[in-house]
Length: 159
Image 1 (cartoon, rainbow, N blue to C red):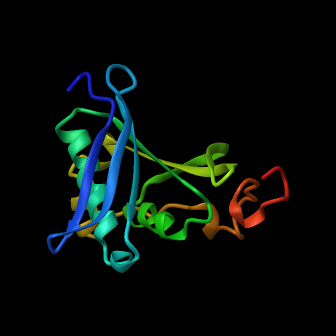
Image 2 (cartoon, rainbow, N blue to C red; image 1 turned 90 degrees about the vertical axis):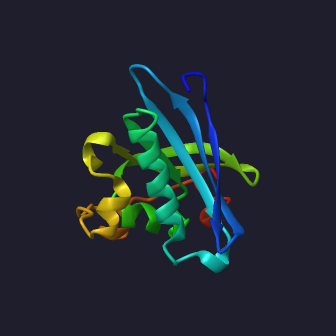
């Protein structure tokens, strides 16, 4: 596995493909980390499918592949994806301005992460048992920080 840089996963519900989860930028050695991205069809959103898939993959990366840290980058206006990291209790680490080029412009992304030490018994197990620690997220505190480069403010502040 030392040569793997990415892993694709299919998300399936009732024998139907409903989404995809990709692990990218897998780096072993001193960094020992990876980045996760995902999507699901609207019909399964809100049913716990995505948090389950994300937790299973993070547990796999920590316990089988020996990684130490996983990161998820989410556009600030993507409330469904923000809810996934909130449910799982991933730590908010900041804002990456103009991080990814999407729909003709560079878009901001919030950064979330978790380390193996934070979920020794498993992320899925922690979530199912209701043991997710409370976190403070920008959208919960006084409206949160102003993000500049999203589709919500095209034409303003450099979008």
